[in-house]
Amino acid sequence: MGERIAQSVYFEKPGPANTERTLELAARRVEELGLGSILVASTSGQTGLKAAQRFQGLNVIVVSHSTGFKEPNTQELTLENRAAIEALGGKILTCMHAFGGPNRAVRIKLGTYALDEIIAYTLRTLGQGFKVCVEIALMAADAGLVRVGEPCLAMGGTGRGADTAVVLSPANAQNFLETKIHEIVCKPY
Image (cartoon, rainbow, N blue to C red):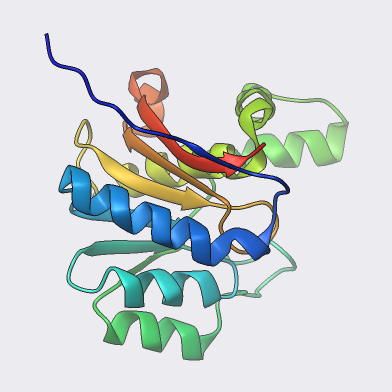
């Protein structure tokens, strides 16, 4: 039986200071594994633009916050970054968060947690960026931008930037438990 050897990198602290190193480590694994799809969470589009530049020619999907996430009728991804990402061949995905939406409204209004937020808190035991990686993979699969069951690389972060990269095979949100985490490329310790 064959085996794969992959070494994870653990950052001393979480946050955007790890973005460049995360992109570097991600690029190495994408090349080593021959992955064709890269998912990256990006609020303003800065991290998404860096990924679109680094992975130009591959299937780069930049997943933004949903419109209204911060305040009603507001999209945090800037028009300039959107245009630059798309000019490099990247795709933008803006939709309801897989671990948010109506259940978050119940928490805010009624002060109780629903299942999707419990899942999110559980995934955060491995870090905020880890939760984001799984969530954006579900969202991209639901949008038909990545193939279910096909390995891809997902990047997320703690607040801004990227500090976590994961190789996973996504599932659709309704089949969330079919998601397979293959390896953690990097994450905060």
